[in-house]
Structure formats: structure tokens, C-alpha cells
Amino acid sequence: MSVTGILTATAVVGVVGIFVGIFLGIAGIRFKVQVDEKEEAVLSVLPGNNCGGCGFAGCSGLAAAIAKGEAPVNACPVGGEAVGKKVAAIMGVEAEETERKVAFVACQGDCDKAGKDYDYYGIEDCRMMSFVPGGGPKSCNSGCLGFGTCASVCPFDAIHVENGVAKVDREACKACGKCIAVCPKHLISLVPYKAGMAVACSSTDKGPVTMKACQTGCIGCGICTKNCPSQAVSVSDFHAVIDQEKCTGCGTCMEKCPKKAIVRL
Image 1: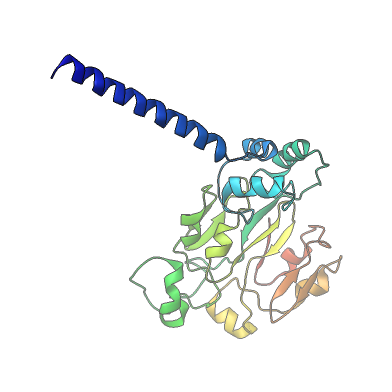
Image 2: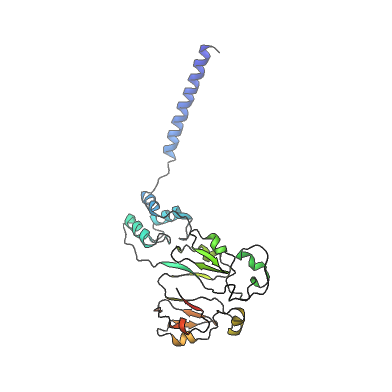
């Protein structure tokens, strides 16, 4: 190749490079995405777990909603009150007090206490039990299936299956709600961390049916209701319910319960 050809090629490449650089520079300015500084600041203090417990698609979605005033500053269940205060300072508002909550599995029907109708061999996923007879091998159709689907979706390793029943590590739980959403029996709910007592049973069958299925199921006898000094316990559909607003955690209902279906948290 002649010297003239080399110089021409070099010139062409240089001109093209300059053109591309100018084009990209103009495009960058024209199509620049404006970033909300408050949104970025809020995102920087969020825990970054992207668990979805706040109801938004990850921490970035929550940060955008808070910056727009579409979500409260304390909407992050994982960060709790500490993160809520930081977000409030960024947004220039007062942070409301938040009550810490944790997941609670309303069942004690483990392998020793709950009856079994048959042996199950198949996919060990609680969600699959809607396709098998009786909704699962345990005699109680309301009880924990024990296959650990809730544990598999927990991003904080806060729930484990022990002897056929899911158990929550209250200290590790961040109340993201993923276990609640995935449980086909709807056994898991959020309760105040400071709550005293809870009914560890979800059966609404009549007493004789529940007693046949599980040794520790609530039979709706009403003894807890009659003995509660703060009138915090009621019975509905053969099942005891504790009003956490009234409960003082005295433990009387737990002591009087003949089936030991009420536990201290």
C-alpha cells in the first residue's frame, strides 16, 4: 500500500472517530436521564435485600416511591425503625414509630403430635399438596405440611422445618412476608415482636375432629376465654383468637388450655 493510501485511511478513521464522539456526546446530553438526588440518597440507606416485603419491586422501586411521596418513609420492613429514621431525615419529615413484627407459624402438629393418613412419596413442595388426596398426608387438613417451601423462599434463613413443622427464628426474621405468600395452608402471619401469647393452631374443625387429627389442636372449648383476666381471648369457628391489643401476656390462657394449643412467643 502506498503512503498516500495509508494517510487517506488514517484520515478517514480519524474523521469517523470524531463524528462518532460528537454524536455520542450530543446523544448523552439529549437523552440524559434525570436522577432524583433524594431517590439516590434513600436507596443508599435501604438494606438492599430486594425482598419485595415493602410491596415494591425491590429497593430501587421503594426508593423511587418514597421520593415521589407515594410510600411512607418507614415502608421497609427489613430496615425497620432505624432505616425509617434515616429515610425520614433525607426526606425532611418526622419518622413515625413503627412496631416490629415477625412471622408466626400457627401449628404445632409435628410428626409426634399429628396423625398421618398415608405415606407420601413425591415432590416435596407444599404447593403441590393441592393435587394430592386430602391436601397432604397429615390427618389435619389445616396443619403444616412440613416440606419447607416457606424456608426455601426466605431470604434471611429465618425459617426451618423441625420434626415436620416450620419454625421461625424471631431474631433473624425481617417480616418480609415471603413465607406468608407461599404457604398454601395460610398458616403464617405477622405478629408483633412484643406479643405475649399466640394460638399455635389454625384448625376450625369441631373439637372431636381436631382431637382425632392432632394432640395439640385447638378444640374451641372456650376455657381460655373464661379465664382470661383481660378479656383478650375469644372463640370463633371452634378456634381461639387472641386480641393482641388487649393481651397482657400473663399466660393464664396458656396454663388453662387443656390441649396446650396456646404458646408464649
